[in-house]
Image (cartoon, rainbow, N blue to C red; front, side, top):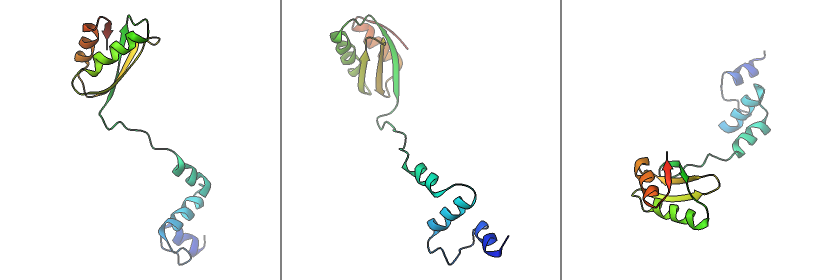
Length: 118
C-alpha cells in the first residue's frame, strides 16, 4: 500500500482534495461504495413525521354509508387533542391524529351510535 493510499484511509487530508466532502466521497468509494450509491442514498425522502402528535387506529363497526363515516369523523374530531380523523367503512376503521386518550375516542364513537374498540 502506498503512503498516499494509507494517508487517505487514515483520514489525513490530501492536498488533491480541497474540501472534506470530496475526501469523504473518495474514502467511501475506496471502501467499495460508489459515488452514485451515496448520491442515491442522499436522494431518498425522509420519513414523514406528524407534528401533531401520534396517530391511532380504532375499529368501528356499523358504518354502512358515507354519512356514517362523516358522523364518526365528526364525533372523533370533537374529542379534545384530536387534530384530524378519517373513517373508512369498508375497512371498518377510523384513523385519528393527535394525543387523545383511546378510551375517549372509543366512547365518542359509541356515543354516536356505533360499536368501537381499540
